[in-house]
Amino acid sequence: MREKESFNIAAAVYAFVSFLLLLFPVSGVVHTARAVCAYALYPSIYYGERADFFLRGVPDNVRRLFATDQENRRLREKIRELEIELEKSRPAAAEAERLRDEMKIAGSSKWQGTWARVSARDTKNWYGFITVSRGTKDGIKVNDTVMAAQNGKISLLGRIYETYPDFSRVMLAGNKAFSVIVSLGINGSEVLAEGTGAARMKIEYIPENLPLEEGTEIFSAPDAQLYIPNARVGVLSKIYKRDSEMSFTSADVQLYSDIDSVKEVYIVRNNLPDDLVPPTEEQQ
Amino acid sequence: MRTPVEIICWILLCVFYSWQGKYLSIYGVSPDWLFVTVVASAAFSSRVRGSTWAFVIGLYADILGGGAVGANALIYTLSAWIVQIVAQRFDFFDRLTQVVVLFLFSWPVYLAGWLLAALFSHDAWFSVKQFCAVPFLNAIAAPFVFFVMLEIKRFFRFYEKN
Image 1 (cartoon, rainbow over the protein chains, first blue to last red):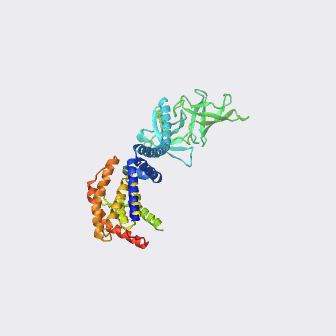
Image 2 (tube, each protein chain N blue to C red):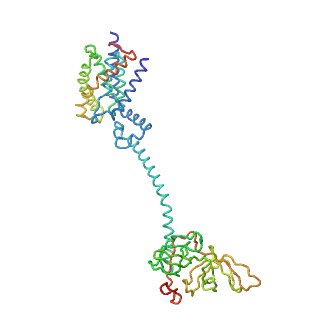
């Protein structure tokens, strides 16, 4: 009998408590606590289409809180992806900048020519030859002048030595077989500069009476036939002491063109006089 | 010894209940395992203990369900109370009795749940599919749940008469 009474009392108390829970606005608090606990332990269940199922009964402001956190995570992920993309595009942007500069320099020059890519280098004779991606199909001819557009200046790099339909070999100004008549300063005295097998040229015979100064700019001779006239070549980098028995002095010329980093060249048509054009194989 | 074992059993039931909704449902409908177990527990436990577990499990169902908190607790408590009164006249060891009681009991329980949700919550929705299917599934699940309940009580020597 006592057990029956206690049973009835227990059932009544539980029913009363349940009813109180129904009457008081605790559902939002309870479901928020449930959602927060679940989100703290296992946030991924709130992603995707089942999010609504797990967030049932949760007040809108708490839903928005979760949505904000998820959006924050998504945006952080997006930022990481974009940073990677940015890192990837940085070299391309630098390359584009360099090409734009080259185009600008070439566009402002008085010579009209053709751009070509450096497609190969001669590893045994690094300062001797390079191969460029234009050939006879593009109208390239032997002895055309090859210029480099670097550091805001367009300067002499070499000349076309051999031509093929799709590519050409360029003899560089540093090649020992290369020589060019240059003037010391624009329209200055003319002397012969020769390649040294390195990234510089040498002027062997400079009359002793000429005033020389390191840093003097060297240009191709104004009346040059083989090369385009008044093209920048380099600067006098070192002047050697005159031998007491000789009436000449010598100097090194640091070339403007940097063969180590050149990637594109500008080939200028020379239009040599007929008597300077070498005979073709058929004519030979 | 008895209470810790029961707590562990109820926790395992809650875990099973959370898991089964995804893997054991048939076209999105599954037996109300919590309710069937509460009825079985009320039929074979002492009266106060049965009511207490019905209330606790009802609260768990409320928290898990997302509806009005207290609705399931109230329904399960009243169900346990009714079952324990009925148990004096019916033999719950008989499987047919288990099936019939669960079958007949499930409809008013579902309706009561929907009614309380409509009164105290904003998201009361009535599923005809669940209303039609769940009583049958509960009736099918009843013999299994009663059997497991009895075996556990026998194993731990928890069996007691009302």
